Length: 346
Ligand code: TMO
View (cartoon, rainbow, N blue to C red):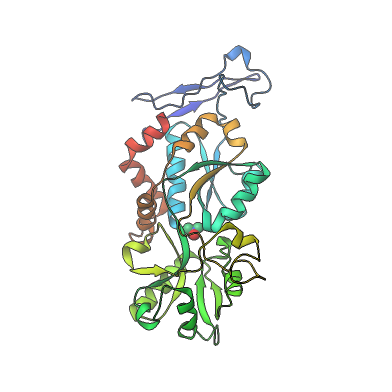
């Protein structure tokens, strides 16, 4: 973008001086209060007590790229905003579970789409370990769950109740699953506990994981063309809600204990005898090193707030309109400049 500003960080001996060079318009440069040139010796990265803000590092801020569309667009939106504020960024294709360990290890700075259903466990583990910070909660409500297109209701009475689904398992059987119903799950790194759920609830289903999100949507499209019964993994916010009518399966209501305590729920021997959270959070997590090394950038990231309609539109730009994620991100930035400038300005 032409409004990109550069944060120049000349290294003088051990003194790190930040000078924010703005281009034409005004104040959006990061409020880096650089320590006086003469007195920032050796420990430039040691966290200072509150009042004296440290200069941000000139190292690139590493943002992961995952395997679903809103995240891929949003990653470049987050990166584009940070670039406009003078930072450099680097995009790193990352496994969406392993990334929490990577943040803990200081190899990735932030994850801006922490979905409770998919990543709550991996995220919380590192937060509890003290190396990842629960940095912000978006103004969004998320759900990730088994889902069917609406015509399936005529084929399987009693939906969206999970027991009704289970009574119709045969409808979803394929050559691959024999006499079991086929549940088309997401890629394995979205670990949803689907197999554990099938066991915990004693369902006559077999979980077949799609290799990519694109496979989910291609199968949904093909099934919908001739009303073939299908039950697959889906989530909201997503583009799907704007294109297909459908519903999530209602499993027994999620509670944290369902994932950890076999005693919880109807199955006293197994965990996961419940659904995913129906009103899950969407958070931003950062490595504990991030605010130390990039205090201004971390403050900007903390102000970033993505809503359901924003995420659904980011997904639709790719999955409905066929845009590249980068192109969709640039368009989002162009259309929402007042909003993201307010995140930079604070
Ligand atoms: C993490 N996801 C939105 C694909 O469920």
